[in-house]
Every structure is written in structure tokens, then in C-alpha cells.
Image 1 (cartoon, one colour):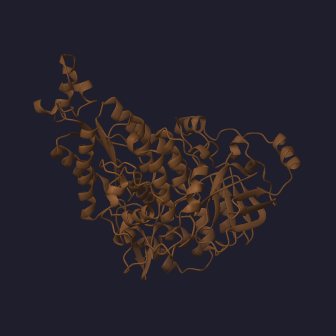
Image 2 (cartoon, rainbow, N blue to C red):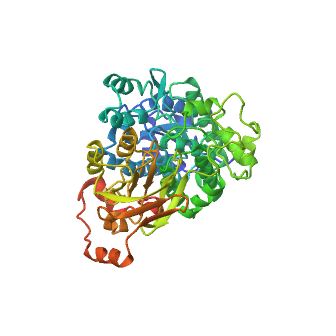
Length: 559
């Protein structure tokens, strides 16, 4: 006897008592023969507010058609999005990380209330991905994630551009190192299509990692949004999801300790975003998997960076796709014993089975993916630092640096805006260690990304000589001597709240150390005098987030 595929939706479609439910479903297209079919939610992040999500509507429509053709009944619903590139450097950026939780809540609410049998999520901006994944793990019905695709690279005077080019141009132009013509030319030519930011920034990091996680189809994560293959991939994902519903393959069957380790290995190998650390801690929490910061550091130590990708490298996501994409990188990791080949994927096959047809070595006619004996870096780039400034741990991105070590005087700012003003006014000098605090999950609230300050520092020519530490986050486009996710955060009385202007601070990524060079007695004296500031928001979503959110060391989760 065949197991019915409407395991959950029969709750609202079967039996005499459900006649009113069926009556409402008939109004949205159900007929007599449809009530025994699986109801599949198409969670759409479509929005015309940003290029990342503006191309989603036709992809969601393609998913609907493919699901219907496969034998399911699709129901499309939306979830909100925040565009980091537009909100960056403003109060609006405080909603970015919050949106991850809102997206998860939205998907959980829609899918659970309607008793859906499966979920296909289509997202673009970087919080769409972990938000959708957390939501799908909570409800734990067969699910697949479809990335809306990356933006095509811009070009100005023969130089390829990404959105980070514009942020760095702000520093260069304000410092007199760039002409007005070039400044405006970069702005006007950076974003030539729909799709998410083009480098191995957070969106492309998370989409790539979801391939390694087993929750997205292999080869799907670096396609360009406008290209026909992207829509074809979404249709294929719909068919795969239908088969997963038939086999009852659920997200928590796929997202395990092994698959999370696979995802982090891929993040390291590709030089991905610091945000992946925060998001995978949250994903592990949603999957009921014990996974900690120290586990990430262990993976870093054994995994080389083998892809030459922006922000610290040369190439963008479409180049990686053309060079063999994530499957090629995964196959190399598998062959070197750095990938769990027995981890399950959404197809019902293991990761090793999925990679069997992928060449063992990257093509010789490209240099986006390096050979194993010629890596960009011998070890991963996302180092977990600890010390008296961050006893719970924080994250440093060490790629692109000649020397990931600095000791210098603290320049203390209680907000991103204060710091940015000082940078643009040329008040920051080589050797300074900038401290941006009260930007953590609770203190911000919302843990803003510091792309504007870090890009301005680079634009000023100080990327190798100035350090920056924060209890906030960084964009995937950030590089330099930067340390984020400092925990405990300032609002909770962490040592970062006790730093004073001129204090000596050491950041040593080689020793995994972040240290305030002040004796313990003085720190305790300052602690006794410190008072927690009043919350910046007392009503609304930011206030609610601040009241319930966990430490960044635990993924900044809200459940």
C-alpha cells in the first residue's frame, strides 16, 4: 500500500467536519481531485525594494508550475526582507539580523497553520537563507531551499565591480584619491542586473553552504539570477522536493552534525563570510544539533582556502560557477577526507553519491579554484579568538592580510555613526585599534554590519594598519584586521564596555588572542562603576528582539 503524501494537510482536507476548510480551498483553485494531493508552500521573498529579491517572482511562479505538474498543490506566501546594501550605515540596518528571525517565524507560522506537507523557499538577500532554513527546521516537513541567484558583475573602465566597490569608493573619494567621474561611474555601473551581491559575501556564502548542507541542489548556488538555468534549477528543485515528500525526507534528517561540518568546511574552502559563523550556530540550534564556536575553529585548522574570491580575492560568484562551482570544491574536500560523504541530501542520495560524477581535479583553464597543492591559504580564514576582551569567543576574518597581528591604542566609539564620522574626518591613524560597541544583538539592538567603516578604512589606505573590533557584525564584503561578534557584548557588561580611549589592545589571529592590556584590578574597578545603559527601543520589533535574543556566541537566536 502506498503511503499517502498528504500526511499533514489531510488534517484540513479530509472528513465531513472539514467541509468549510475545503470550501475555502476551492476558492483558491482546489478541485475534487486535489484534496488528496500534498500541499506545498512556496515561500517567496520577492520584493522590488532591492536587486537581490526583485527577480524572485518569476522563479516562484516556475516553482508553482513545476510542483503542480509533479502532482502537488502549491500555495505561495511571502516573507519580508531587509536589504543590507541599502540599509547599511543607518538605523535601518538594525532590522537586518532581526529579519532572519522574522523570516523563520513567518515560514513556521504559514506552513504550520496551513498544515503544509512541504516547503520550497526562494530567497535572495543573505538573511533570507538562514531565516528560511531555521523556519524549515522548526516545522520539519520535507523542504528545499532555492537561491534566487547572484547579480552579474558590474564594470567601469574595464574593472569588474561589486557593491563593495561603491563602499570602498566612498573612502577613496573623500580622501581625494578618486575622481568624481570614477566615483559616479562606479555607483552607476556596480549593479547591472537582479541578484544578490556578487562576491563570496554573505548571500553567496550561505547559498553555497546550503549545497554542502544537502538542502539545495548541487550546482545551483552560484547561478546568475537573470539566466534561464536559474529558473530551470528551481523547477528541478520542485520535482526533487515532491520526491522527498513521497519518501518523507525531512530537514532534520539532512541537517545533522555531519552536514553542518560539511557546510563549514565549504565556507572555509571558499573564503566565505563571517556571518556564516553566526548563522550556522543558529541553524544547529534549530536542528537540535550540539555545535559550538570551538567546533568551527577545529574545522578551520584542517581546511585550506582554495578559491580566489572577493572580497579579498579576484573573482566573483559567476566565475566560480563557470569554473565548476561548489560541486568541484566539495569533491576536492571529499577526496581529502574533509567532507562526510555519508551525509544525506534532499535527493535521498548521500553527498558522496551526488559527487561521484564530479571531476577529482579542477580544470586547468581556470584559476578561480586552486589545485590542492596551491591553496590561497593553508588554513581557513575565519578564526575564533578568545581572551579577556571576549571570553566567550569572537570571529576574525584573516584573509588578505600580510600580518594578522596588531597592538595599538584603543579609539572608542559607542556607535557605528561616531566611528564613521572620525574615519571620514581623518581622525584615525595607522596603528589605531577602533572599538565600536553597543552594536551587539541586545545593545544595538540588532547587531549591525560595519561595512561602511571597514570599507572607508580601506578606501583611506589603512586596511593593513588599523584594527577594528566590535560586538556588532561585518558584511561578507569586509576584509582587513577586523574582529566581530565580541561576547559578552557591551550592553551585557562585557569587557568591551570597559575599554577606555588610549588603552592598549592586542589582536593576534595567529595566537587566537584578543586582549585588553589592562590589569585585572583596574578592569574590576571599571566594572564596579559601569552601569547598563537604557534600552534604545522600548516598543516594537527591535525591543522584542533585544529582550529575548541570545548571545552571538550561541547564534543570536530568539527561541
